[in-house]
Image (cartoon, rainbow, N blue to C red; front, side, top):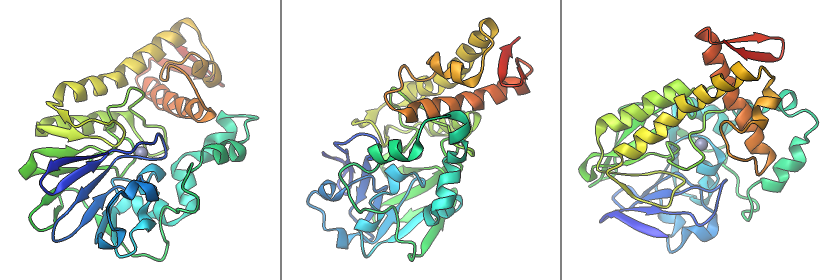
Length: 301
Ligand SMILES: [Zn+2]
């Protein structure tokens, strides 16, 4: 579904769930898209050859999966996100897949991954490795012609996650500051819940009139209360965790079973992500002297 933000900016809401995402179309002297979480059907009436520039908010597959659909486009992404776009190995390590065996003993990654991987899009690859990638930097103004956007480095979800401010439209594309019921997500090695909170504060400080995110089908007007509530989930998760390990000293596997972050684990990936995020909070609580670790066991004090 296509919704106009202004006369030449549209948000394309994806009709599909995870591994797809919403994307932005800018129809200007430089025709551009921000994020490519779409399959071929998702192009609707757009000629992919007319797109000059693909901007990725970050490297995750649900935001880059359609990069190759635009044969004439240059690709731009924050500089620290280039390596995982280029290299499968780097992609896997950034996603903390090196933690899988320890956190998910006895669960076969390959068969589970195959089941959920890129449903419906066959051969679309995130990126043709031969293409040159333009590095973005914080505060950069991207000039499309009539439209301008400022790059806002907003780490936390990934180290080089960016949002995009359109000052003339008083509008921000917030990407994976996503406002979904399950978020926020900060599982991978370079993700950081404290940085996520600072990034949300940065968006709040700009006081945009409207925002859209990558994973809800809504142009959010007056977004400050929604952003503040989204941010507040992070310390609430940590407090739930701390209280739990005060009463029930346990290991990471039992903790994940308590569903302190996700209400349920519909696939093994939600369980894996829950464990990754619990580890972030446990590290923070240990730093503050509120949790001690003895072997695999965590105790709140
Ligand atoms: Zn993401």
